[in-house]
Image 1 (spheres, one colour):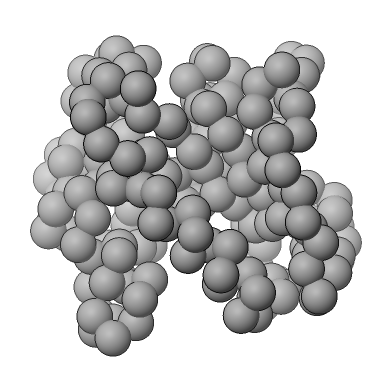
Image 2 (cartoon, rainbow, N blue to C red):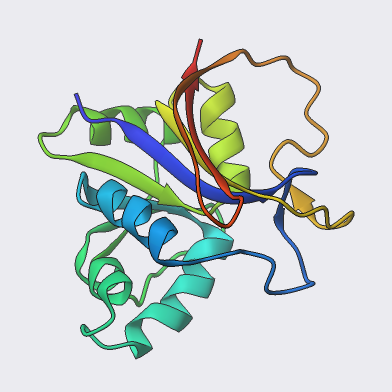
Length: 179
């Protein structure tokens, strides 16, 4: 069975999305880790907001940008209750029960399914027991404000560390699974 894996950048205070802009310390070392993860993926799962942002950004970049090539040519599944049509080629709207749709996607033959971003979707799938791995790039910065991965969640969730690596920038790449 395929694994559903999420990849998020997060600050020390748990912020995953902030209006303050460029806080991520992206470099070649991080690109290698992301590239290795992408090599194990042949499908993408997105929430509404991330889909809309990515559908504006990635199609305008050429295939000479490796991430754009991956994003534009990999099948995309979109979990959304508000969207009715998807304009980005290769995108498919998940319209039924999300848990059933995700379980069916995971049963299909193929490589892993990646969730790049989409923190609300990641959180809901993690609590529902559908997310197999949570890969975090933990950046050594405190922003104080912004959307957090576990904003307002009161339920306890026990995770186990699968792997970790400290990068030269001070970023910690850590992958977790449900305990």
